[in-house]
Amino acid sequence: MTANTTAPSYDDVEVGTELPAATFTVTRATLVRYAGASGDFNPIHWNERFAKGVGLPDVIAHGMFTMAEAVRVVTDWTGDPGAVVEYGVRFTKPVVVPDDDEGATIEVSAKVGAKLDDGLVRVDLTATSAGLKVLGMSRAVVRLP
Image 1 (cartoon, one colour):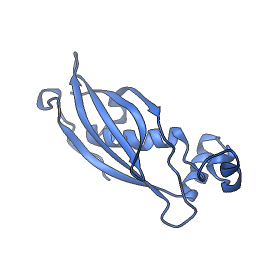
Image 2: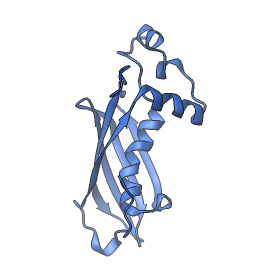
Image 3: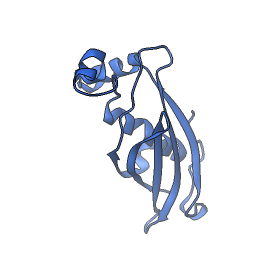
């Protein structure tokens, strides 16, 4: 996925405007790299035996990683990560990452949910993995030119 070279303008978007959807792949190697970058070495993110021992179906992706992948749909749409002025989610299901070369996928769609004042729009995101909604109440407030 490549970033948008022409940022959408506030005047040109309407409630219901759909952003380009995206699918992101996450493998165990991705999780190890993210753990190194974030400092989050919780074994539920890399040790299958530990994850299953605490009741999880398998190793799961970091919640913050999942959240970051989802908002890429918004930052790619605006062409400017700094345009996001607010972002929040509720974690509803984990992204289960099997120990194979294909890993898991996170599928993200988004649309403009509301036009606010001062060039701000609310973007509502939907993120799923293996057919399950993994983020709930996923919303970003974005400043458009």
